[in-house]
Length: 77
Image (tube, one colour):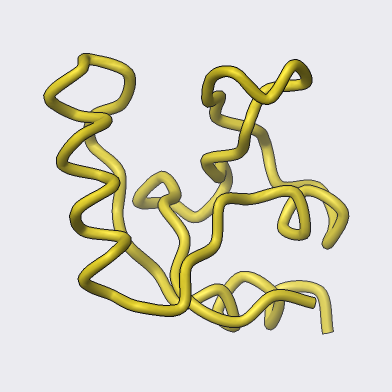
């Protein structure tokens, strides 16, 4: 179980994770806590904002929200 903040779609159905090769990022559909455990989760809100800004500038992501990971876990418990 993770603690902190993650990047996810506004409807909370997709979450930002590292890809299988751990060289890029991908949006993964949240079907269980397994996907949440794979997510990029940082404990500091400022860190998450910085990471999101860099990914957005690189054109890798857009239109994501920063959400406390507990809100996603709550969907399954």
